[in-house]
Amino acid sequence: MAGEPPAAAKQRRRSGEISVVEAGSLAAEAGLRPGDRILAVDGRPVQDQLDYRFRTAEEVVTLTVSHDGVEGAVEFEKPADEPLGIEFADDAFGGTTLCNNKCFFCFLKGLPKGLRKSLYVKDDDYRLSFLHGNFVTLTNLEEADWQRLGEQRLSPLNVSVHATDPALRREMLGNPRAPDIRGQLRRLARMGVSVQTQVVLCPGVNDGAALDETVGELLGHANVLGISVVPVGSSLEGEKRIKHPGIRACTTAEARAVVRQIRRWQKRACATRNGATVYPSDEFYLTAGARIPSANLYDGFSQWENGVGMTRTLMDDWGRARRRIRAGRYGPPVLRHVTIATGALIAPTLRRLAAEAADLLDIRIDVIAIHNTLFGERVNVAGLLPGSDFAEQLASARGLARSERLFLPRASLDYFGRRFLDDLRSEELSATLRCPLTFAYTLSEVIEWVTVEGGGTPAPRPLRSNGRSWAVASC
Image (cartoon, rainbow, N blue to C red; front, top):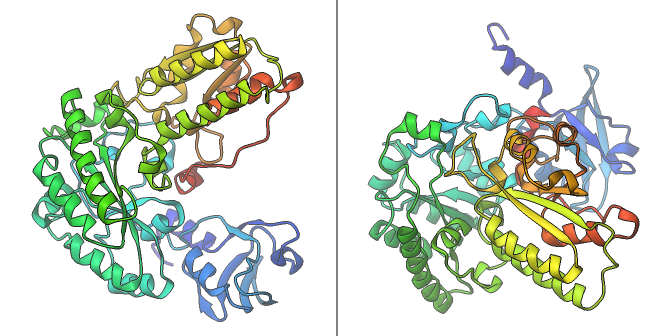
């Protein structure tokens, strides 16, 4: 195409490109290979992975495939819904839909330079919401998108609401044309599409009475499965650029007020629904010094990736491991001194749990809080720590030189487990620190390493990040 930007031309050439063909799959038996491109299914063009999945669910499927520029047809006969064994280089073949809003609290506005390229993509694509759990605002949907949502029943979607009052929501989104989210939720309900919702809470903007209005109205929609309330996040760089009074951290008193407010809504929801439905993120509980709720108030941890219930799963994981230790189900320790480094927010809780584990196993477990110098002290979760902060702060940490193994949070790496936010590779950090390095999700994984006979490797855990779409561009 004349005048087509190089990036767009590259995207078009890779559209529908196969990245993986599963060994022994139907696609492998048919001779499909990575690098081939899927152009159509049953003669109909496919615009993304959703089209591919939807149209290949039939018993008889014909793919139009391009191999080295030569087109051909491949027919499959199979049980309905059996996958062909294909993965794609990009989920959205024609490119990702970008956000058309100008939220004053957008975290991407404050990202410093030098991070993974994919982190700067301001997506608002309902396809990535369905495939990977990304939150979207639904402000850029065209009628063809609505028709497709109904046809393919893309459920559930993750939707950023922030406020149900139309004027307040438009103010927060910086978009005077943003549709009324309440009408959009009703339309999704008629299509049979459920949603998980989130409210990014900005002090003095959408808290207090506005939050009550938002939660109350969302609970009135039967297709709203859950409502997470998360604190606004901003880097030091972002605060300098944005200069909005709503960009600040909640105080301890404000966090306690949010926890109390949502507890009242949880009681109402439990009385009228099959669960609590509305959840403060862990940061509110930890900032408030409040008791972490039991697992049954998280309704299956459907918004775990949004920072809702991570602390409870950490605590319950340790409870199960503690019972196993006391029952003698772990072997004797093979490591006597290990170190765990994590974000400053969860470090006190993890330090308490690790102390119990160390006493029961008669070993030493040091827990080091890593402070975020890239984004600033307000950003204190493990998942947003850059590799440079681990490298610099652990290089001078007391006792690390005598530690037999260092454990870091798996959430600080991309989906593939290769890079930190600042593109530092995990093997580069290990070489810098000169200490054996392992990434873990839970304390029980640390205990498995400490007690496995001969220092062998425990069974690998499944990936739990929804960030695959954020990582593809840098891999």
